[in-house]
Length: 364
Image (cartoon, rainbow, N blue to C red; front, side, top):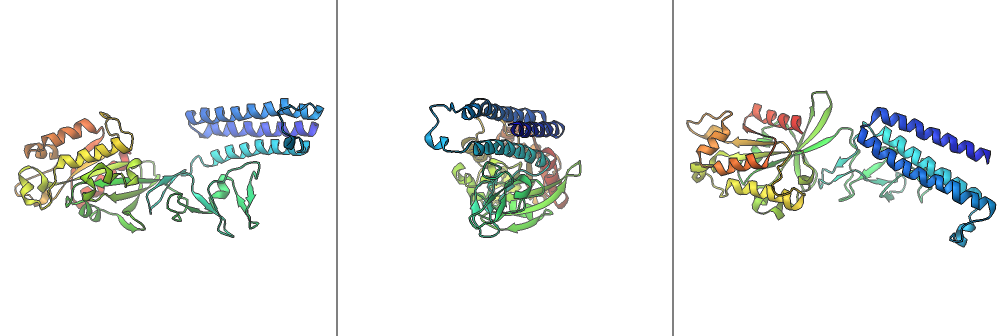
């Protein structure tokens, strides 16, 4: 019994050390949440130790305990009890370890954003949906093939991982990824804008996207994924629902075709109303992604006037809203003011395109 008490005190000391580390490294709201959860689990363990175990020692087990539980040796019960505590301690250590690590992935094949991938046994290929420290293994579990599969936060990062939606093999990212959606009507110039930006084209699945690595003001690297939504998908919000990145994207680039504005519409082969594209985007966020009616979109949005260099006798700099209003798009401009909190008007150009992406990343 003295040995059991000694081990119990050691585990409590380990918990205390982990909590001190969490206070140092984690935000206050995360600390409170984690401590509350751990205290709750600790109360359950303590109740088990104080109520159930003494009764087993004295032979006065509760009448509600089944015969199968009575058959479990007391030493095994003690072993499971301390394994449970040890597993929780290892989980907390994992939380501290993951503090400055990326905790999610974005699948480049189906654009699902997920925090828990599928893990693959290196020996036999068995896929595990979740790996966590538990009674079955504090540091590792044994696969049916005999391989010891790590379950710690550090050990799991060495395994092959799959997207839980499409099964695509995706390595655990070392830097955070952010998605910027390029939207606009058919023929507005979305593809031209992307191709004239300093981005690398990636084609791995249904969505073709472009990427770059940008450093923020602190020197921290960010993986930027720029993806174009085809103009035909703005016919209805149901068409936009298929694009999963609208749920978590970090910003929008709305391409405005200068020849779809006011009197210039006659020169545009594509027939669509500028405001309709904006309305469909907003409706998609309301119907499918919990944006409340009347609520403004918080994500930074760049409204980019494309093909303005093709207009005769028009000098467009920062006067894009003025140009739009003077050419019959006052309703469109008012919708921007009423539905977005962080937005800015730009025009296209090699220098301007990179500045647009930089502006969004600064405001994410």
